[in-house]
Image (tube, rainbow over all chains, first blue to last red; front, side, top):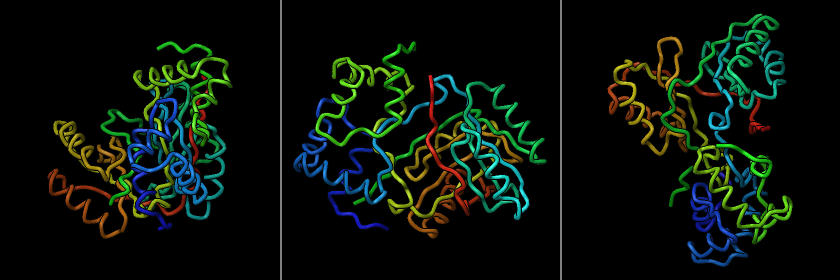
Length: 152
Length: 153
């Protein structure tokens, strides 16, 4: 793991879920922790440089915005993983794609403006790449939370 | 919720990186020609409507020390699915929990731990607590793509 100080951990815990919607958000974080605003800004800059923080911004909800999203899995022969992966990744709606240690070895997410669009893209991929794709839209969402407790 | 032109621009900007300056929302407000207060109110409204799920830092979890990650598929009877889904969702180590249909499995969880031992232990603990003994741990071996969705409204 990359080096992190106690203060870095405190900052990370504060800014993942409760990033202030106020005129001076970094000042508010600084007050919560008990350090200076300039230190908060400096340390966040360092955490970005180290690659620990990817960005500070919003995570949008595809459903609320009217988009359709689904998880797909397919079975690809070992020697074709790169070729098939490249083709699938060309679609702008494919945001995540992983090779996994399972018989269904390629898993990707697809977000589109409509369900129909997703189905037709999936069908086109199946035909072009001669693969079978399992389409698994969520029937129910119990949790989506991508923040981490940085611990003590 | 209806989005006007300003909302759509905010949605676009929020997908990027907030400036690391003392007044980052003022920067957006100057960009869009509306007041800082208005920008903050609009972001609050997007949050309340559910369109903005979360505002804050997005980490690269592997670099943050969570190097053992897995998708775990659980075979749960449909009569138990809500109960078990909520139970799994209550764990801090579980970031995503969905009901999906795949082979015999019906509940999907993404689990994050610092070590592989910790991960296995956690899955076993979940199996005992939920009473679900049929499950499959699926790990990723390569990341082929990981980007944020560019929502254009």
